[in-house]
Structure formats: structure tokens, C-alpha cells
Length: 195
Image (spheres, helix red, strand yellow):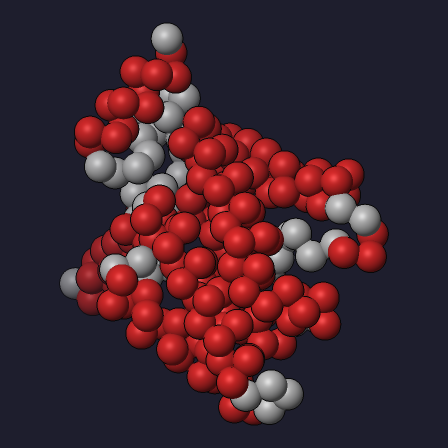
């Protein structure tokens, strides 16, 4: 009786921990392709269009956003409003905090992240990589800090716009994937992508 219960518990655990978290190969392929092209386009723009001295177009938080918009496309945190709004709001907060308290990293870093979370919650644009975008505004290189409020527009807004455009194409190429979760928008993109 005890052995039976243990075996059943092991089977259930394997199912929950392993099989329920599996993503089929088609999903993995489209996630890979979207992330590769999205981040690749940003990196291409940085490498070919910006002088080596000013290479700040590709920021780390775009990698985390790629996980959401290509790998977890049904998540509320991965939707276009959250992607764009979360990054831009957080960038503006980060730059503002840095301008008020320059060079006090022990204060600016936590303030930027904390205020960006609150601002994203108020604006209903919560996007976890936005916290990293705010943090980069206060701890980034001198090139990033010298951009001031332009940081919110380039690289942040420009980069997330590229990620969004690629996500709209790649996440709607097959009938099994649809992005964003708003059904009216999804039908529009599905109809437009095949005509």
C-alpha cells in the first residue's frame, strides 16, 4: 500500500514537473526564430549604423523581453502595451532618478527600480525587464548616462519597437500561435500577414 502511494506520487511529480512544462518543437522553433531575428536586427543596427564609440543600442533588458515576447507570448506581461510601456516608463523613471541623485549608486539603483515598478503598476504596463531598463539608466556606462532622456527613445523605444514588430510577424505565422492576446488585433494581424 505504501509502495503504491510512493510510486503514484513519483508518477504525478514527474508529470507535473516534466511533461506539463514541455513546449512542443514547433513552439521552440518559432521562439528561437523570433528571438534570433528580433535581437539580431537590433544588434545589426548597432554594428552597422552606429560608430563603435557610440554602441549603446543593444541593452541587456532586451534579452529578458525576448524571453517573454517570443517564448511566453500568452503572458499578460508580454503584451505590446506592457512591452513598450514598461520599458519607456522605466527608462524615464531611471533617467529622472539619476538626474536628481547623480553618482549615489546605493540610492539611485534601488530608487529607480522601485519607482519604475510603481509607475508600471499605475500605468498598467508591468513588464519585468523594465526594472532592468531603469537600473541601466543609473548604473550604465557614461554613454548611456550622457544620453539623458534620449535614452528612453533610443535605444529603448527604438529597440522594443523592433522586438514588437518581429513578434507580431513571427508569433502569427502559424495557426497555433497568436500574439497579442487581444482577439481583434490577432485577427487583424493574421488576416494581413497572409494577404
